[in-house]
Image (cartoon, rainbow, N blue to C red):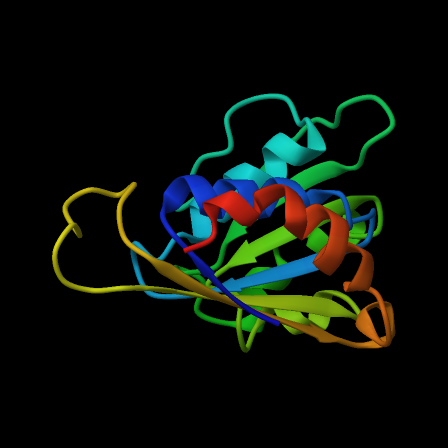
Length: 172
């Protein structure tokens, strides 16, 4: 699935809508250049899950756990940018919490896939040029690609219809 989003606000709204589909044990791998909107999308997912605390880039702490809202899964937010190997990822003991939480790994392509049998890869691209000084501006292109049994068949179908309709005004 490929979407075009008008700005950072639409990226957050996409995350909120996606949170309705995500469940404990889901692994989401975010791919994109600096400033593409990976953390912005994670903020939207966190808001949609109703997690406690601010969802911010975990670049310097590498992994941050956010307490869940009642009846919702916790959010584990990881930044794998500074991780040099699978062993360093393994040292975070994410496999212990991945079954009970939604786990988002920024910069995780090629390393985080081993955390779960199924994963959702979301690639974000941001239009370069004018407005790049403003982190809220700029069109984003988002591609969602499911891998493994969890995402086979119609896993995203309910989200494509109803939830996507709720953010349609924000789409470019």
